[in-house]
Length: 608
Image (tube, rainbow, N blue to C red; front, side):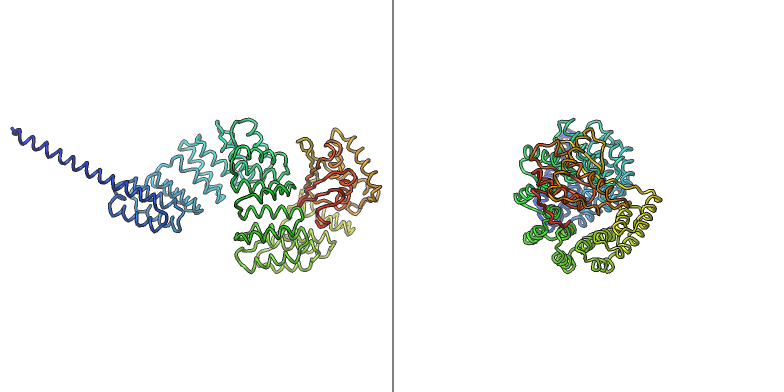
């Protein structure tokens, strides 16, 4: 039998041990909290390493998984130089890394644009039997998106389905974006349609998917549907893509409406949205509005300047584009691939050969941008438009990189314009060796021979095109009337108001005779008589669109027309005189640039 004093002493000893243990726990927690506080204060890698050493010295790193995860996350997500290299070394010494740790590494590698490494971490995670969660997949799918790794993306989609995350909206939005950016728009749409509850991000992801593959009409349709059928406010990323669609389709009214929405709902627009507005207005022919937004921006980047320079190029304002380029350099921004293409295009569209050569030579001399076939294509286009065909050909042959179909296509077009069949035949042979499935190439070749009245060669080019099953995309002109777009093709008689339109065309021709207009029948590249050529000229799609707009738009309003093909010289002369007779400003955008006709004058200075 144990005596009472002994029992009491035992109880007292146990209480002392518990008190000591509690003190040790409290001390440990206090030290941990102190170190975690210091961790948050780290501003560079040197400070971080000192705090990390303190964690190790106090044995916090080994004793607390929370501490280990916090150290790893701070380093991996810091964006410090060599941060991910150090984070990888930290990760390797964690005894039992958890899902959070693997997610941290994946996110860190994606932020650092080391996308292959992110996928490798995920593979290791699966092999180690660590189960992913809903935070794993958005970053992982972003890596697949950037790598255009559709095969890996589909495998990860399978994992998502297997693990039961197929209804997670963030994961689904990432899948929509991944499939869209990888060109699998049908799969992107299938995921989108399956969503029971679509968020603003869901819609924005689908709009972005369509924008990524250049389906601009579908992009705008989705954006309108979102605005009409939901009470959701579109995210800024969705607005940026919708503005890009407006820019590429010439949907100025919708673009202006989006601008108004942004001003009403967002107090300060970010640089991406402002740049998109500059690009939209510039590509829709409203250069003054684009310049107004550009000048009010507090900060600008390379993309902003590129959008403005491209807009000036489209309007034929080459000298203004060069001044803008100089302003960019003075602001301390470095030129990149996109900016150089914009500047060279501006020189090309304005005939600034000397200046274009200088810009290209500066690019080569500085060596900061590795010249691509696209930049060489711009130089060839610049020389070719100016009629320097021999120099353009020598430029192609001396390219230090592989020649491609774009370069030869540009040269062929210049040979056709300047009616040099001999050099054009060289270009056509080289082009067809590289790309024999583009119907446009055969049409340019055919038209070159037609200008030279080499009808047998015309027939051979057309026959070869037909034998390969290639179909010509008909030329058309689109005009907007009361918010609705109307498309017309050459000799179009399908419109319900066809009789009124052709009466108007007849009236226009009558008025033009008094202004000395004479049809340029050389623009009809067919082996037919003069009378038929005149009849064909009357029904060019641009003329039909102008007649329709004159009938159904208010007097004095601007007529805006978009074409899918380059404007012929006859339509150019015709439109110039119509703008004077009917006192209308007419803006025409063809495949390459804008033409502004007002009071019988025009913006392109006959260089287009």
